Amino acid sequence: MAETTYLPGLEVRGSDSLDSPRHSAVVRITHWITAATFIAFVVSGIAILIAHPRLYWGETGAVGTPSLIDLPIPFMIGHSGWGRYLHFLSAWIGVFTGSVYVLDGILSRHFRKDLLPAKADLTWARIGRIVWNDLRFRRPPEEEALTYNAVQRLTYLAVVFVLFPCIILTGLAMSPAIASVIPWLRSGFGGQQSARTIHFFVAVALVLFLCVHIAMVFLAGFTSRMRAMITGHNAARKEPS
Image 1 (tube, helix red, strand yellow):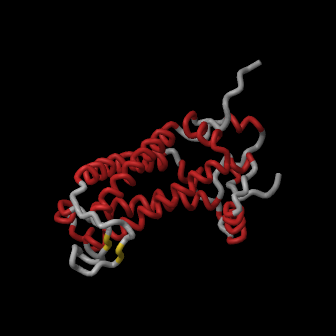
Image 2: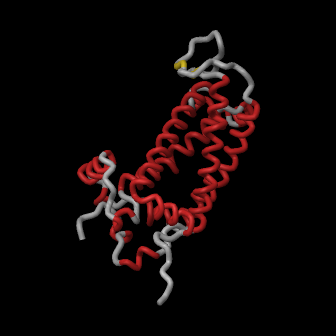
Image 3: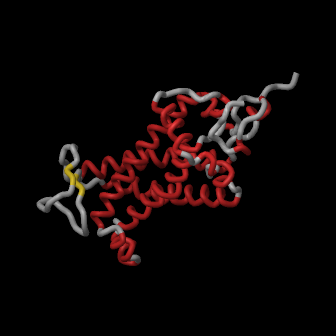
């Protein structure tokens, strides 16, 4: 077998592993709920942003005050009531779903077994090779596509434990009610408008991750990857002869 960049315990050996469980029920359910919630996040976030497409730094920022960034969006000041309501609702659904996923991942050792890369994989040579193959849209062999490589593992860990917590905390920091109870949360980000600006850039990073994620799914094999995330198995079960 050619040298791989995968954890030894997760290397595919033999055709029987093609029919082995790939994703648990909790992972699959939370994945699809998060996907739907994220779409609602993006749609409602765009509606909120269109109402005031300017970013500031510090505690305050409004029309007539110097802005940090003027986004190339038509300035349509208004009250995006439905957008804020949907954003708030999606946020709490996302927090609950994410908490279930993280708790299950810790208890089932999903993060340790499936997402924590081996030390041998954390070399510039191996990571560079993976990135170079991805940039060339080179489809990995089936035995390698059945598990996560080191770059995917690191990316997923960063999304779960860095980006999502950051977007949740910055969202809470923008809430006057939360800030009145936990003032250090807002001040820790440099003020309400600073939290909003950070919130925006983290959201952009998550959207970029989603685009790359979808591209990699198509590259690795859309049908088999979708089947794995819906049924939990890498390949359709074969009927006994």
